[in-house]
Image (cartoon, rainbow, N blue to C red; front, side, top):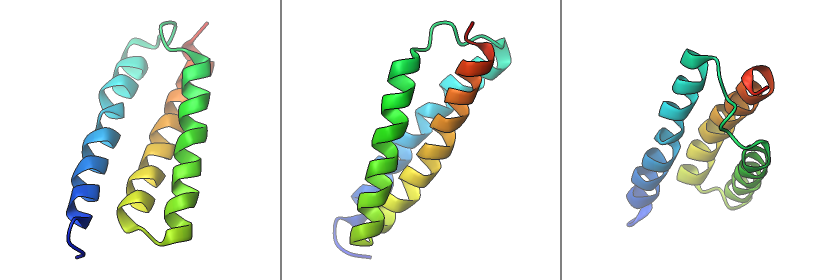
Length: 85
């Protein structure tokens, strides 16, 4: 592993895992009224761009965590559309 690459794995794990409690809460409560649709769309767009950047530069931590993050935020967006009204 490249020196410092482990920082990418740790940082990515922390940031990505921060989405899990929010997603679980929304699903459990079946309520996403408090979640901003604009925030969710912008976050998903940014994560997808980061994923493309990681793929372009072949940066494993960025690819891994942004792929997982994209799935989690897509789930949050789905929940917002389903439960947000």
